[in-house]
Length: 95
Image (tube, rainbow, N blue to C red; front, side, top):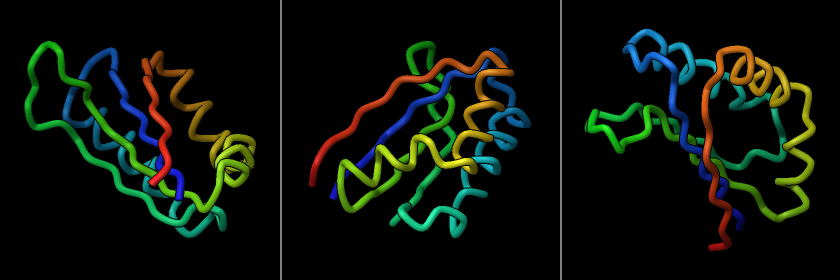
């Protein structure tokens, strides 16, 4: 199993902006067969060093994660992220 964890920092970490991103990320559920699990959380800490939103996804293999990266549903989310200047950081690991 591969876990793909992405942290998001919005230009304005407003509650509404975080909720919109959370909804867009969660909308991938059920639309990408290779996606075995998805969890999205909005930060409650709000410290200067905290990220605003976290995405945790699960895949059966590295190959599935690689295919997910080019999936049209995922690419639409990426387009939204880039058009809103959202900063990301990622960690992928095996379980």
